[in-house]
Length: 132
Ligand code: CMP
Image (cartoon, rainbow, N blue to C red):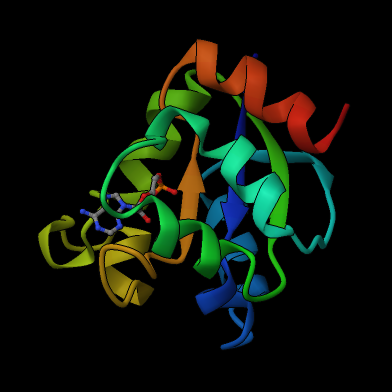
C-alpha cells in the first residue's frame, strides 16, 4: 500500500464540493485513512509550498490557500501517488484530460480545487505537515 496526501482547496470547499470529491476518491478505490478541516495562515502556506519560493505566482498562491477552509487527507491504495495524479489531472483545468477532477470542477491554474503529492519524497514531507 502506498500513501499520498490530497488537499481540497478553498475554491472547492466554498462550493460545498467536499462530499463530491470524497465520493470520486472512494469510487476510484482510495482508502481515506486521515482527514480534517484546516485553515492555513500565510506563513504555513509559504512553508507548505516552499518548493515554489521565488516563483511569480507564490504570493497569490499562498494568499489564496490561506483564504478559506481546506481539507487535507491521507489516501492509501496500490500506486496511490501516480493513480491520484492521474485522477486529478493537469495543474491547469483547461489542459486537464476529460473526466479528471480538475477538468470537471477546477476554475483556473490557481483555483484548481485539489492538490496531490507529486512524488514519494513529497508525500513523505506533506503527510506529516498536516498529520504529524
Ligand atoms: P498544486 O498542485 O497545489 O501545486 C502548486 C500550485 O501552484 C498548483 O497546484 C497551482 O495551484 C499553482 N500554480 C502552479 N503554476 C501556476 C501558475 N503559473 N499560475 C498560478 N498558479 C500556479
